[in-house]
Image (cartoon, rainbow, N blue to C red):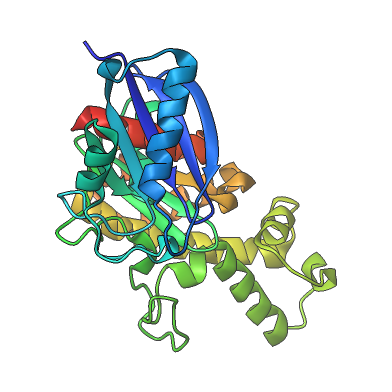
Length: 312
């Protein structure tokens, strides 16, 4: 019987790695730099680092169920990718290559999707099998899990929550090239953008007027202190996010929405305000969906990568 499993969350700057028992206990975690450019081989670097950890712990490959990989791009069902811009990858058979290099079964998923899987397994959504995770950072990402399995879709674009179009009248373009995406309003960048526009439009009585380089944290902190202008910005943000999540609910009917990313550090002001407006957008038992904050932080990816192997 296999005792251990490995998770590798591959980012453009670092690779986060974790050694787990098959029951989900994190035994060790570490990082290696993501070496890019001509002649680099990220998968070999990952395999080499894992082998060194095995030697350090005096563990045999025969004791391992495999290794899970999270990558920053859409992943097809066969574990291949068409492009991972941040890694300099074009079309690449990631699963097949990793298995050949490492000699263990490999499973591959989009980084946001595996983070959702991690939160389902050992985080804020533990105990549920129908989960939507939303990450609110510089952009808006997400992962959708139905009956315990990641929904990645035919082309690997399942869970791209940030690019749900919620405003057909928007004229400014999103980074994806469309206009009116959820990401334009509900990311940290979007919150600052909306606050900045309103500050220019109105001579508002708000503590935010005194802040030179405004951040989303500034807006959220001011709202928690009762600043009426900041409260209005947060309410507008919550209405838009709730509307976007209601679209997903009509398709997947989740038990729970888990909110992560930098913006979620504001705490329950996010979950409670979004849940309030979400209930106005849905019907029937959809109103019973729970809202919770993510709990695994930067470790969600490695937990999800490990679980991906065990699920397959």
